[in-house]
Length: 140
Image (cartoon, rainbow, N blue to C red; front, side, top):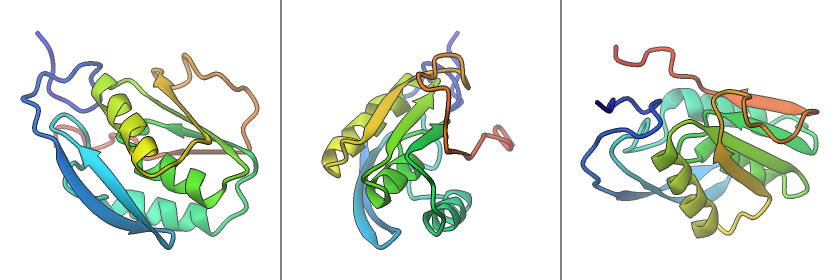
């Protein structure tokens, strides 16, 4: 039996893609989301706070986004830091598909988006910055 949590590899959900625009770090982004991913209707408050805080810092040239979901954190930091490479990982295959679509929709190429359970398949070993908004209240 598949689970419906957004931190599952393959959430068992009825697909219902949704598009929305959101301004992050002074840039207008276009996002596509779906059932089975975290915060599918908008960028959640915690992610917005993290993005704004990280966006005001010097992040270096190797950034890791753990649990990237459909990509708002990693993609906004990649757009803000075009000279950096941002590796974005998640266990949710649907979220990874959406993150790749969102990278393309927003013409962001300085990202590597792939499956990993935490650091299991992380490609780089020496990051200047690691960001995450983990599912600490999942299932409430």
